[in-house]
Image (cartoon, rainbow, N blue to C red):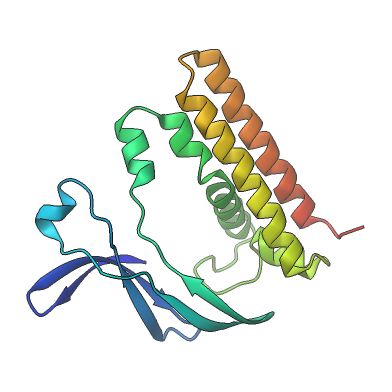
Length: 178
C-alpha cells in the first residue's frame, strides 16, 4: 500500500508492509524523489528489508515506490509502461475476475494467485521465482524495443509477444507440473 506518511510536520511518500494478520511490519520512505515530488515530500534515507515468515518458510522482503511507469506514460511510451508490469497485472486481473465469476469473496485472503497455484501444483519456490524473473527480463527487453522504434506495427507485435509469453507462463503455473 502506498501512502503519504506524516512524521511530526514532515511528509514522506511511503509504502507500508502489512502482515498476514493485518499487523504493521514497517514502511519504506521513497529515497529518490522526482520533479514536483520534491516540493511536497522529504526523501527517505535508506532502503529497508524485513525478515518475514512465508508459507514456504522464512524470507526477506523489501519495498519500493515506483515512478518509472508514470514517466514512461507521460512521455507517451504506453507500450513500455504496459509491458514492464504485464505479468503482475495480468495475473492479478485474471485471478480477480475468476474469483468474482465464482461468487467468491474476492477481497478475502486466498491462495489462488498463479504463483501460489504453481507451488500447489508441484513447482518449487525457486522454480517459480526463476521463471518469473526470466519472463520479466523478456518483458523488459520488449519494453526497450518498444521505446527504440517508431513503427506502430512493431510496437503492436512487441505487445502481443509480451502478452503471449505472459499467458504461457500463467497457463504453465495453473497446471500440474509434469
